Length: 308
Ligand SMILES: Cc1cc2nc3c(=O)[nH]c(=O)nc-3n(C[C@H](O)[C@H](O)[C@H](O)COP(=O)(O)OP(=O)(O)OC[C@H]3O[C@@H](n4cnc5c(N)ncnc54)[C@H](O)[C@@H]3O)c2cc1C
View 1 (cartoon, helix red, strand yellow):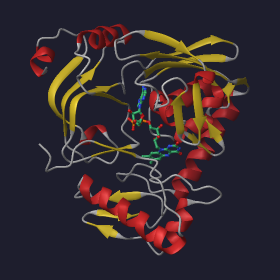
View 2: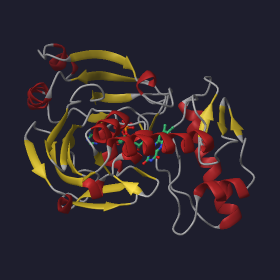
View 3: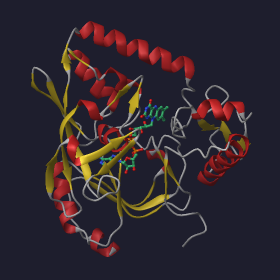
């Protein structure tokens, strides 16, 4: 199977045994057997149509919501951040954003085009594709209410147009209605957002204000994945963690942030196992204290170090 990939001709980058830590915002985790960075959507179609159905694959954007275990990932990681990064004005109310475009760039583009409603995306350090997969949101906004339609690609490399009605969309969750799982084994290629015409200066000012607010309340410039846990029904994960006295709790180089209790940061020496262990400890201690089992928002994937 691996030989099959070695003989494949693609226009993008296809590399073997690639460390994944630098491709994630937590900067931990083992390597992938293969990483493919497509040149464009046609290159991705060709790649998916050429690889064996049985080859495990996952799509990675900016890796800002994943914990990749120290044993790394089997199969191929399709890394979209940086490719598929087009932004286009379609008509007075709509823009097209590529799945590999950084949300921050998308938000700034919309503001510069005089379209309002996407400013909240400026502080989300992921791609448009990752935001669609997670229904990312902030300050009361979420991406899916803005979506007019999306284009996806399936495991065989076939492209399909889908609308919001094709998904069950909730708080940080998106499920394909037909397949009842994640986004149904499909990857997002692009999204068309419908926004409200407005003043570019006001849009830029709102982005600046939201970024200032974020800097004041969240740790900056350290490895993290944003909020580790979803907020439980009617409550705040950060408040429960703080009230349980867990700010500053450490395991190896990993620590529950003293600035924002739902952030887990590290000093550069932590392993993915340290982080996962700390996540479990927080779950157990919050549950013991308040009877609430916090559920991770971050997606934990890959093999433990000891697995072959
Ligand atoms: C400092 C910091 C602050 C954050 N603040 C916020 C916030 O305010 N609000 C918020 O919602 N999130 C926040 N996050 C979390 C994260 O940025 C979002 O979840 C973001 O949408 C993830 O995008 P990504 O490209 O990094 O996805 P990744 O981490 O690369 O992937 C996340 C999941 O999405 C899937 N995925 C990625 N791209 C695609 C695609 N094209 N098609 C299908 N599936 C795909 C992956 O397979 C994976 O399961 C924050 C993270 C950090 C580090």
